[in-house]
Length: 206
Image 1 (cartoon, rainbow, N blue to C red):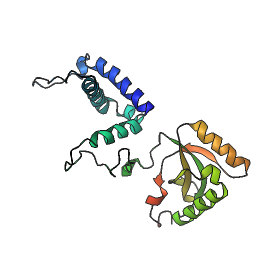
Image 2 (cartoon, rainbow, N blue to C red):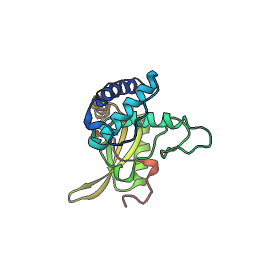
Image 3 (cartoon, helix red, strand yellow):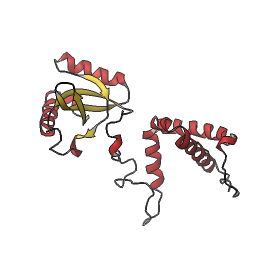
Image 4 (cartoon, one colour):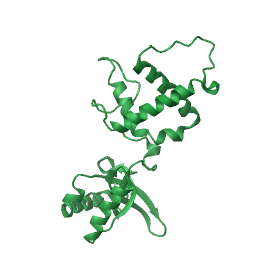
């Protein structure tokens, strides 16, 4: 929540600056309807201007605030009156429900960090491996989520990398790795890209 507040405040400041930028002004001849004279309405207006500019001219910047954008989108869609259809493809009824990533973004670098625990050929083997690792290290891995990321290793073929996370920083992931390595387990800090293990078909990786 704190990150979202900071994000909104930053967008409000940037939005105020954007309203004075001729390059960002509307090209329509129709008169622009002013936002209501309330703090939240002015903030929403500034945000919409800045987001529209970033969506057109700097989409990569939006990737850095994707979790905050998604949380805001979910909250706004929750305001729809009963019976109305949200404009966004929300999954689940709770605000903040996780949306499945688009197919072409599944293996894109994640904003979060993870620990790479092992590599497998098949999903079934990866599931068994994850269960065994959690049983061996319940205090370290018990509360983490697992993802599988496809990787091509030269001369060996395709593997599924088992990752656990997410962590907000690489330092947090590194601390987990140090604890696992102290007990003789393999561990490496990676990003949290990949598919949730439950979403992967059993035939993947065969």
